[in-house]
Image 1 (cartoon, rainbow, N blue to C red):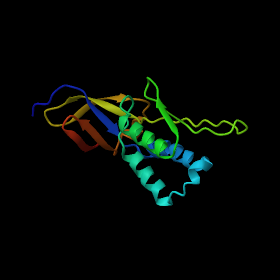
Image 2: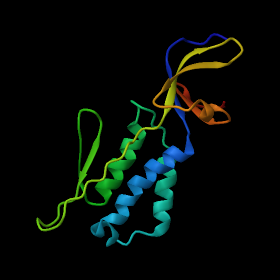
Image 3: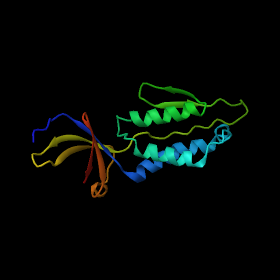
Image 4: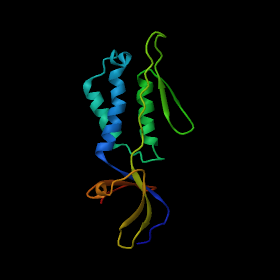
Length: 154
């Protein structure tokens, strides 16, 4: 099997980490009274949580997560901007007497980059971000390639 040595991005679906980041974002929907006043159904938050958890976002490749967050903030009436590093900044203007609140969270998740595929089909990769070796065993992976996603298990 002839495989290109080009780097292929690997997104690690580490459920606990993803849920922590998504919950930080979803928490903003409950902290802002203006957003609550819109009367969004509860199942919408569940769908958003699932969409964010399933969106690939390894360090340096957070585009799909960024698109979801931008869409949701704009849909909630916030003024949205991005900076040169790819951060999403949402602003909801209030009265000057109100306290100012900032909620910051990461959009990325831990991941790896494919360095080589052996003739037997084993994937050799370089880790991105902080890892515990114990977390690598029995995990589901999505290998993002130019031909589409490939599911894998370690």
